[in-house]
Each structure stands twice: as structure tokens, then as C-alpha cells.
Length: 85
Image (cartoon, rainbow, N blue to C red; front, top):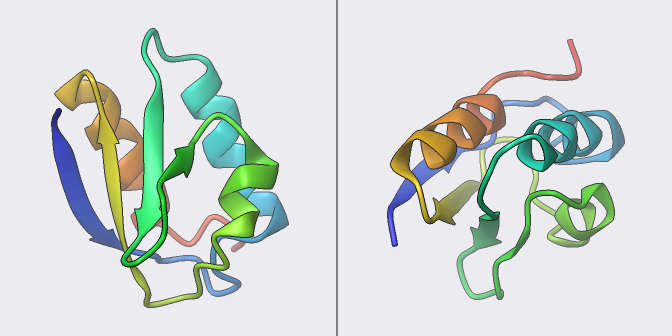
């Protein structure tokens, strides 16, 4: 399963707005994508609520994984951006 480790770029972490934008984008992909913090089980990137339960803060490192590398790259790029700006 392809994966990519990235740093959370949003100043508020993966909170409401960034989580909603990521979940919306993940929901449009053909395959499931997951986001996980070290030491925690990965969650479905298609669910804003599940993303928020991670408690990922700005600067935290997360792993994005999925069936397709292109899907992983798409979501990983969003995680790295400041989506709350």
C-alpha cells in the first residue's frame, strides 16, 4: 500500500475547516485514503470527524496511505498546505 509521510501545514492543525476540505477531496477519489499519526490507528480521510479525532496539530507528522499513489499524493499535498488561511 503506497504511503507518504508529511507535516501538517494548517496553522490550526487538522481541525474543522482543513478536515472538511480534505474529507471532501478524499470523497471524490476512487479508492479509500487514510491518515494516521504515529502511535494511533489511521482513520478514513473521507470523514472530517475521523480526521479531527486524530488531534493532529500544526507541525505534526502524519502518514497518508491508500491503494493508489496518485490519491495518496493528492491528499498528502492538502495536508501540507495551510488550508485555514
